[in-house]
Image (cartoon, helix red, strand yellow):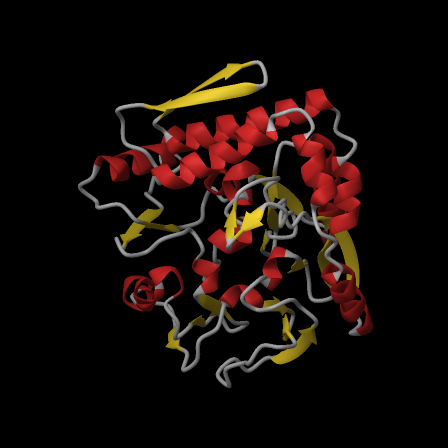
Length: 350
């Protein structure tokens, strides 16, 4: 809904997991059409829904790359089971769709003018004919470049800063921590559409209502359990102090400066603390301010309800880019999904 508000005239394709005859699909459509968001200023519908019951996760960016010529290059992989959905878009929308002969993760490629930023340890399909800039990065299976790095123009790039963010998070007192966690839990419950949330001192409880829901039950329960634990005295500060040092953020920033880019630093929190056997069990969500969708006139930036960090990030991006910055509620919803507006949106036509 935040994206539709920021882009009132843009035609939008919504990938969803729900059968078009289901009550969940009806709830999704009615939610996105609130305040006539599903129509442009001429009253013409601008939402198109495509559906594949096998697909999971709101991460289309992992499956495709949009190059500087506007081609939609589709990875040979089946990331999130979205490949067939993207290959069908040429018929639906008269756009240039090209099958790649290799598997890649689109979120690892970032276009800056006529150059393509990508990890130094990643192979590039010959069909992707950009001049590449290789940057140091963690394991390709462990981290996507667009979580940390975002070109704002041909020459200006935003790079996240973990230690700056640690310092800013430690400034929150106990009262501010509780309000923040409450906000995240409420936004989760509202987004689910079928959860009744109740607060009692330093704890909260919830029950599922007999209504259709928009978040898978197990995912919802797992994330609310993390927030419930994080609400306990001392747990928030413990999570901040226990977050491992990252280091890649500074290395990538220095490499980009050496390549001639102007680099600005904005908050970023990896949220690695509390992962066990590949699954998040404890701690803060990822705070993924660099994961923005940038276009000619503006920037969609995630916000998390942390006033001084949200505002700092917005100020830096607006000043460095000269563009309007539109907030998209990230909260724990996107943060515990390790994503942001760039991960869940692709701009492929003017």
